[in-house]
Length: 447
Image (cartoon, rainbow, N blue to C red):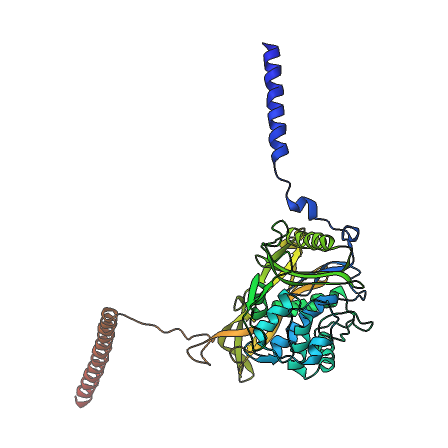
């Protein structure tokens, strides 16, 4: 009997062990910690696309050649300055100033396509002559466009970037950093048109004035193309660009979104093509699994209520009150180790407002901090002013007033009449006695 029980116990333990071994190991257990040594590239960065905060970095401010991820800046300036329906006519310089054998879709001198078609050729197939054609259309020349690229980078906060061409072929003075490229990618995350192009896996450019054949384009970024390699495809990837030259080595920019979290991963000077995709997945998995979004404020959310005073005879009199609301939606990406109770809220508001304030007037601010670092802040403004019935009667002591029902009033009137009648009776009686006394006295005198 005992042996049977022991055998059954052993069987149960074995079954439980097998079941536990089949349970999936979640990515949070693998990617909750990420070290620079794990990233097979010389430079990398993971950025919160909404705030620009760095979540992970490896030599993110070191200068490197960007190769074709340069074309993200070319796309940004094109989207900002041209319409999708504008026509581009390709010049001899645009086509023949690039290295023979480099990435191209075979445009001809004098050939015309739309800006929309050109952007698909630029971003999906990384066509270098198309980058030149767009540069000439925007700025008149390739050199002038390169200057505009650098100025735009500086305006975005990319201080360690210098562009010499719109395509990214090697030039000793053409460089950037992982951090700067993340800033440029962040600007594109706000472009619905760019993101719409990124959704396109395959694209066709129909016959043109110079070519009778259809050009077939395909997305080269493997995390964005489920047909190229289904094992690498990520459904949360929403944009990006590949790059490679012998000097720059492998470069990759990727934007991804999962729920409310938007991330940008940049890899510069990667060891291999498989290596940059692995490193990008490591960065994105770490960001999605180790961080969470806190919704701190909702636009028009009531934060406080304040009285509005006027001054009369040197005294403050409340004649209205108003709601104080947030001016914007504010959410922040924080490590999952941070709890709501760890975030400090500072509200800067006066005790009261004075007459003359108006709706939507900013009267204060609110900020959220963690470890003395500001996570988010917003202006506070006036909303929904409610006025008192009288600007001078508000909050003033009221004199008590007595009210009687009609029956009580009648009773009081009767009592008054009785009292009055009694007084009249006694007055007359007194007068009558006095008169009688005088008459009696007068008759005695006559005798």
